[in-house]
Image (cartoon, rainbow, N blue to C red; front, side):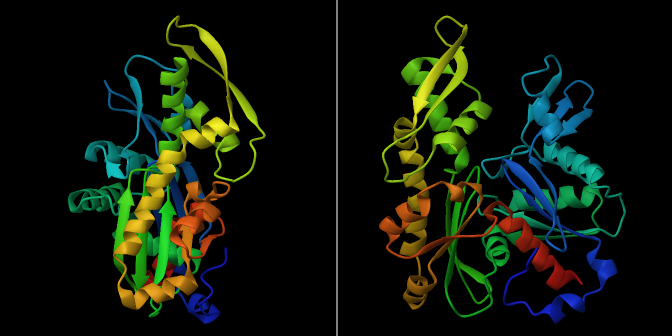
Length: 343
């Protein structure tokens, strides 16, 4: 893992290794939870899911273990998301998820572990406090929250403490989050619930209302990964899948082509661009010129959509760049922030 380029090697070498070894950076997303150690190495990257028995309250599994349960069990075992659309769905559910996560990561109660967690713009003050409390209940002695925009910028490798205005857009599963940074703080930010999940939902709705066929989220995501793009090229590919005929109730094979998927995802992509335009509209004049040269930095899994950077550039008229390993930008930013502030 290479830390931000403005960091001098001595800043890392002189840290107390024993203290840093107790630090974890946790990016708790609506789709996936990513955990990094202080070096920025990813030690956990699994779905933000929890399977539990409603009757006994016992946790059956989290992450991939919970995902494997979906659609395969009945009765009292349910699978839920403790975070949905960037918001805490249930404080109790979040507590159980964090405690189970800490067991997976071998964090003992009353240990001297420290955590830095991302705080999405969509979270209320109460929800942010619930997240911090859940971390402490799970066994962390110290917990610090950091704005997702700042975490993403640090993880990308930007010097957030300089005077130059920087714009970062995190296109996650649930939300599109856009912010402008200068002098170590967020000057303005906007968000909307139009992340990658919105593309999946658009594909599901198209098949449900257009072909009377129901498919689950995992199949919709496979279609998105295979066909979704905003390139200005002739369509080439076709995908087939098995769904359920809503009229007869039996399995049916349906096909969808690249051109149809482009049309289906056009609205959610426009909403994401509107978030960026809203942020730019609130940019102070003193920083606007900086953005013309520094451009917009994209991160988050959705940022890898083919043709997206070119499509955004046509709308905003300034350069757009995608971070290296964009899915991990926020988590690694949290790790570096923790390394420089908790040693």
